[in-house]
Image (cartoon, rainbow, N blue to C red):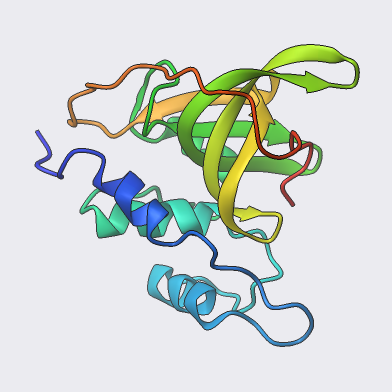
Amino acid sequence: MTTAPALAWLSAARSKLGIREVAGSKHDPTILGWLKLLGAWWSNDEEPWCGAFVAICLREAGLPIIAHWYRARAWAEWGVATTPRVGALLVFGRDGGGHVGWYLGQALRPVDGRTILCFRVRGGNQSNMVCDAWIPAGRLIGSRWPAGVPVSTDPVTLTATGGAVSTNEA
C-alpha cells in the first residue's frame, strides 16, 4: 500500500493555482520546468499541458505516473476506477483530444437553457492557467484513484456559483 499523505496530490495542485501561460513567444518558466522534469521533447507552454500538471502533482505526492502523461485520455488507465470524489482524477473527452484534472465537487449548472450536472475541476491548461473550472459530467470518460491509496472521500455537492461551464480546455 502506498504511504502518500491523504490527498497530497490535491495539496500540490492547490499550490499551483494561478500559474499561467505567457502569451506570445515567451513561456512560463514553471511550466517549462515541469516539462523538463518529465522529459518532454517540447519546451513551450503552447502545447496542451494538463497532463503535465497532473503528473507533477502526483510526483510531488510520491505517486507513480503513466508513461504517456502528455496524453490526457491515457490517464483513463492510471490507478483504479472510482466514482467521482474529492481528489479523484477525472478524464474528459473534448473535440480534438481530452482533458484531465482533479475533482473538487459537483453541482447542477445552467448550460444552453437547460440544467446539467457539472464537475468542479482543478486542472492545468484551463483557460491557459491552473484554475478551477466547471466541466459537464457528460464529457467524463473516467474517474481514477491512486492504486494502493485508501479511498476515504465522497462526492461533494457545491453551490453552483462562479464562472461559466467550460466547453473546451485547449
